Amino acid sequence: MANIIVVFPKIEDAKNIRNLLVRYGFSVSAVCTTGAQAISTADGLDGIVVCGYRFPDMLYSDLHEDLPSHFEMLLVASQKYLSECANQNIVTVSMPIKVHDLIDTLQMMADAIARRRRKRKAVP
Image 1 (spheres, rainbow, N blue to C red):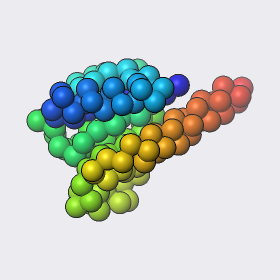
Image 2: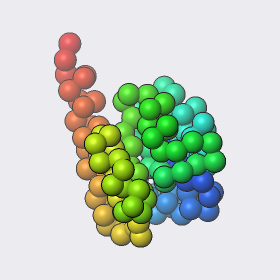
Image 3: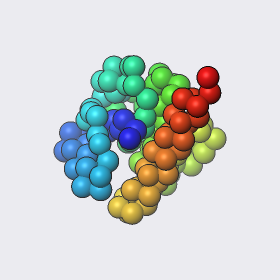
Image 4: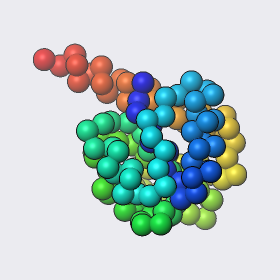
């Protein structure tokens, strides 16, 4: 299972997303409120960062640049902000969140990570 880090500026929002993901069978490695916390947590792991648009210390784009290359990002934001990141290789879900859209998108991303892991292990 992919390591999932949830990053939102309000801890209540981050915990609600974590609880939702756990209810649907995902394992959440960490809940963070700043980009720096997420970067620190991501060091040495691979997986998915589920995040909002803005944090107290940076924007999602700064976080995306500073994450290890083996991390993918799922940005949850309003349609206005989502249009800005169309060609940055970031997966998006628009707000207000539809639970099944979020879960299906996250499952698709987790499956892709699992396939990449199997390919890396299969290559001698």
